[in-house]
Structures are given as C-alpha cells and as structure tokens.
Length: 285
Image (cartoon, rainbow, N blue to C red; front, side, top):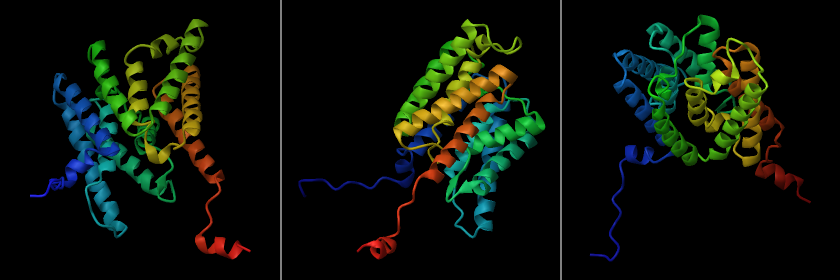
C-alpha cells in the first residue's frame, strides 16, 4: 500500500451541494420544510411542487428550443422555490405556474451576454403582483411562525451570504434599509396605512431578511467588487424605502432590487472590455 491513500471521488451531487448554489438550494429547502411542517394544511407543499415542476418543464422546453442538452436546472429550481416561498397559500396554482414561467422567461430574454439583467424571481413576482394582484405572505421566511423562528432564518441566511461571498452586500443593504426606516419612524414620516413602524415588525422584517439573503445575493445580477456591492446595496435599500414611504404596499422590495440590477447592468456597460490577444499584438510597436 502507498503511504498516501487514494482519494475516493465524490458523486457529482455531493460536489454540487458544496457549491454556493448548492448551499442556497439546501437553505431554501430547509426553510420551506420548517414552515411547511408547522403549517395547518398541505397548501404550502402544493405551492412548492407546482412551482418546482413548472420550472423543470419550462427549462427543459427552453433548452430543447435552443438545441441545448436537457439537464436539471438548479437555478430554475432556486427561482421556483423563491416564488413558491413568497406567494400566499391562497394564490391559485395557475398563477404560481404563470409567475414561474414569466420569471424563467425573463432570464433567457432579458439578458446581456450570458447573464440575466434582472433577478428572475423578483421580475416574475413583481409582474404577477402588478398585473394579477397575486397575494404574498413570505411564508417560508417564517413570518407566520412565532418571532423566535427568525433565528433559523438568520442562521440559514448568514451561511448563504458567507458562502456566496456577498456578506458585505447583505450588511450594507440591511444597515441602510433599517436605518432609513428608523429615521422615518422617529420623524413620523410615511403613510398612515403603512407606517415605518410596521416595516420594522414581522412579517415585513422577515420579508426584508429573506430578500437580502436569497435574492440580493444572486451573483449574475449583482456586482462582484466590494465597493460596487456597497453602492448597489445602498441604492436598493434607498429605492425600496422611498417606494414604501410613498406608496406602501408589497412591491417595494422587488422594485428596489430591480433598480439595483439595472444599475449593475449600466455599470457593466461602462466597464472597458479587454482587447483580444490578436488586437493587442496588432497595437504593439
């Protein structure tokens, strides 16, 4: 026998669950299961199954139409889980399916290069909310459970933020978001129907935490450098709070995130592209 034992190759699924995307998928599944177990009925499970099945079929059809190999799309599953985790249990299943299809279609249609312009789940949920008035409860953010369950959300979210290397971005967003709401509450600003004090309590706090940990951290639609991450987070939080202060409602987090995605795309356009090797040789003296 050799001194150093040969490493046994790990199955591909084990390697996947050690990736950042794997951590996100596991965290969403765990939160969904906890919220589903403590729910009084099976409706949450129907949302999860419907959205996930729709995502798998939609991504397979898109891959077939584009003449690509058909595989299980983990990014599609993550989008489906986020959508089903946010919509209310009273949402008709056909709307859950439609929202999922719209979200995934936006990923393939609205893109720059190979990267989507907008967070797919946020785009689909905002579209569904504005057009179909789709209700939301953010049930997998544990907003319908006793307040101490938020610790589970925090633990899962922190692990994800660290793993995808977006913890600075998350901290900048939450710090800006809650600071602005606190200032508004102290000076009695905002609407009488949707006060800043409301946004500082459950279920609004759960919604902000869930969005920060699982949607704000989407690598393809957010900046990579620390400086840009901080700017991005301040923009998202400021827009979200401003929308909440003026209009209230449920769309403010999605609007803030999509505006931030647009800013990310704009800044990427301004970044000079590296010249190909042949061009560099031609320019050399």
